[in-house]
Length: 322
Ligand code: PEP
Ligand code: MG
Image 1 (cartoon, rainbow, N blue to C red):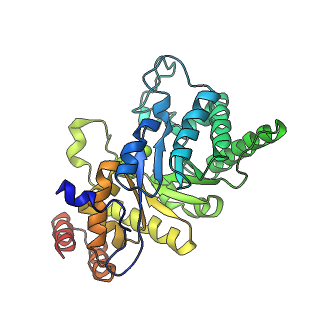
Image 2: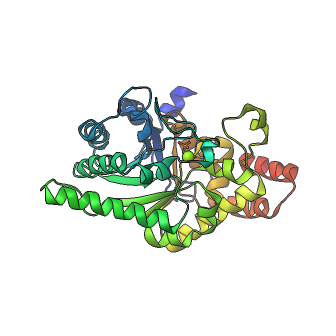
């Protein structure tokens, strides 16, 4: 089976009706690149840059970060590389962090921490922008909740560009800036994201956690974590549909994107770009190759109208065996 999948490495991920689907990889470190290539990814959809900060006693400086980002960007040879600014706090604490929140998932994490630690953020943005001169970089910002954070983030990026320009250091002035949709408020107040950002990526791991109030790290409630909850499906349908309508590129980079049970559902919701663990890419491609979008759409519409969990699962089975 693995051998059969391997042959799909260079195949185009097109549905039976000829719609092209982008299948990108999630990575944690530059050394993940060989696996990305072996599995035929057409880009990096999520480089979780915070892994450069974990399991060590000091912080990576601008030069070290620049080298890591550049290595990935150059390694992908012109294909898009989406690097997420660091998402620390909550489940990913830096060693010796002084701040201990009583409820870390709702505390100072991700972009909130970046905006509260300007020096840390500026260093990363300068490293990213410098690396942008070496290929096709997109910068992705985690955990944005709304207008104020988007504006502040964009100001920080402008500031970092200005500082590089003043020093005569090269960067791509048109580097694309995207936001993760991980908070229900962001999904519901999507207009400002669509207006101010170049692309969006849905982090279903967090979006589900925050929508259902299920701590994703707490085993006691893990059984309640449900990607098929009607509220989650409505949010996904709204975000994907609105972004598509506005012509803003939208992907899903949470675990849901790499689970075969949800590939057709997401396709039927209008998703055309997925990002997942490299090991899931070829299986997903095989699923895409055997999917007819016009056949999926009516079933997915039925799923969106259903509210009984058994009925939703039943319809999903029909979708997946069609
Ligand atoms: C997510 O929340 O879905 C996501 C991709 O980010 P992380 O899992 O790193 O929080
Ligand atoms: Mg997340």
